[in-house]
Image (cartoon, rainbow, N blue to C red; front, side, top):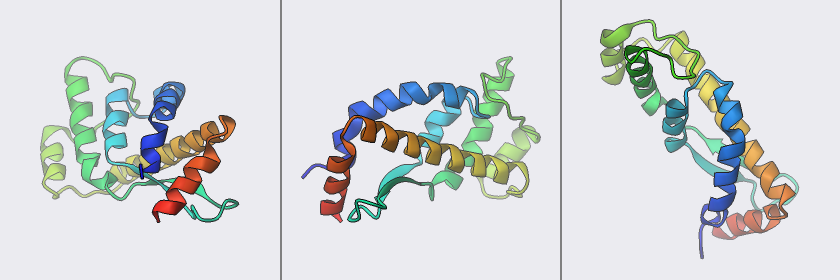
Length: 149
């Protein structure tokens, strides 16, 4: 049996296009958002309960890619622009290296960016579920996820 995510590839592509404006308004560039999305897995919580089932963003791998977001920022700034992202990297190359090897302090701005990424990915998950509901596909997707549990 196919995984529920395999059944919604086209829907994901449509939601990606529709969600692009929301990403542009966020603190993340499109390159950063692409990296964030590679670290996120979507799951259906309470899939066996039609009333409470919902798509959730599993963000447990996000902290692993956060240092790379700083690298993207540094590269974009070196090329002469922030590329749509509204954040500032404060530490430069040395801090990026320290963060990449796990020696960064991980406080302040890093925690804020992680929280913003978690929030935006859940907003995406909610938008995806709304899209599936509006297309009459949610119940089938939910049932497929419940069968797989």
